[in-house]
Length: 531
Image (cartoon, rainbow, N blue to C red):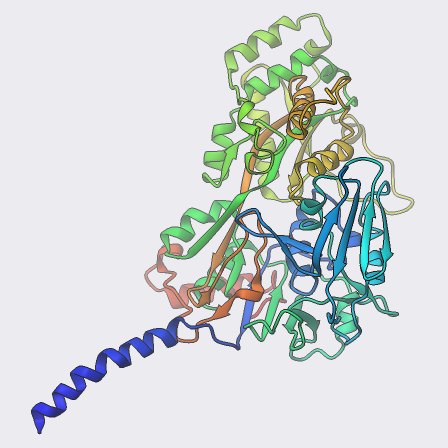
């Protein structure tokens, strides 16, 4: 009898283990994903986003929880139908027609109609494009060819939404902006500005046309300092955090799951006419040769960036490898000496204004100044002043005379042409005098970039990837390499521990008490974060 019992156990145990393993890896519904972001505020209204800004990256990720586009691009380069079921265009690529999916409803129960698509796209599309309803379809027309229209519509601000009478946004996506525990008016939440430490609470859309997401909710906390976010992740207080680049090596050493996107942010220098010295291309070239981009990418950004030689990254343009990064401090010194008696020989320092907000742009600005001074080019770093209200005093002389600007540009479009158009417009870059009309699209884009880079009017510095920290309980994390998160596919494994040791990070032998001291010291600065 005893031997029979053990034989039964031997036969049943593998089946039990297989069932347990399957249960541990099968998707499950339920749970709230806690997301922490460093951005102090967010806007879910695509009409308010500024192209190229770092804030637009956060806005698009959060908006994607409740809003959808007409089409999407998968990681294999194939366009997928979303709110448009099919599309077609004429031989010249000037007239595109999109059939709108039937039976889709906004979160208030109203049906999505082609007129809603037109109303959403009209303020977002360039003025030269005409969009209108044709039966159950939406037509987009242009006087020039639009071979990249699908890339444009699959990215950037081109979400479809409706606006209620009280100016709240309605979407068709997997989540709905709602009231978190203790809050009562979700429509007021949607219209209100969100400051440091504030929350956005997205609950699952039970009636989403694409199916209910696995998560019950996504709880977003804004304005969380990067170091605090990483500790929250290790303690299980957060499931997903936006990591600062300098913290990635520490996070990996602490066995934190880290995901990196393609390079999504360009840091660079641009020149204007505020200082006459920068009008001499020899000085601009000397400054370019003086820059140590390898140190910027490897030390300041902890190898979470690469030296940049082009305006657009290789993954987007396909031709960035044709541009070279040249660093030659000795040659920079020679060029600087050759300016003796010219405008570039003025004893006045070049004023470098850091336009991008945050500590990292300031560090990059200081590194630029150090490299420039080592080659005999005096550079003074000034930080972009805060905006002034009505009746404020006029800008100071130092503020008005900045001839060099350090900028940050976030790539938001999957169309290389749209991205370059936006960058040229934002920074008033002049177009080349001649472009071969018979050249291919990529050849024309390359010629436009080359005209700016060969004249050293813009100096790319580094391209930074986007790091994300993941909790051990986060499953089916399948983002796009260009930074879209797809949280509708994510589920939480209740059997997986969410905490991780933090003694290594703190460098102390008593992690619990050390963690408590850390959180007590930072509570005031992040009062809105979960305690």
